[in-house]
Image (tube, rainbow, N blue to C red):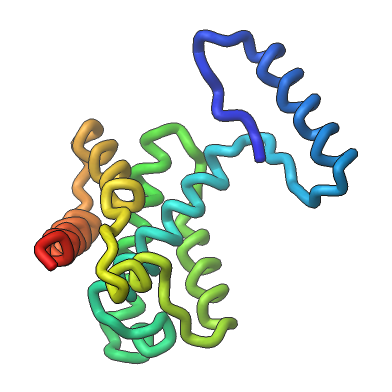
Length: 167
């Protein structure tokens, strides 16, 4: 957990509120981790979700099978992650391309998994396209960033979502 700063609230007041909340959690025995910059963790999660949620949904294969499917799979996945990292950097969130390697290594250490978006697709539920891909697209557009893989994945996932809405 961490602060998602509100420019209309004094930083020291926000920090005090966070510390009070953390004390309550600790007193209640909740296990948690306080982050100095929650935006870093947020964009790391956006990078993970943009890749694995969309790819497992679009391909209908698990992460391991996707990465083994062709020589281009790994490169496409990393390129997608790099584009999200570029957006994060323009949002003043300091992420490095090494994050993509770390996230791929994390997934390689796991058995093949499907994503929550894939489960939503299989169950005929609406996909969280705008939450997972739409915000990075919006910010990339604002900054004039060239994110062709992200835009392609967004367009394809949006089409799948549209198909599901007609079921």
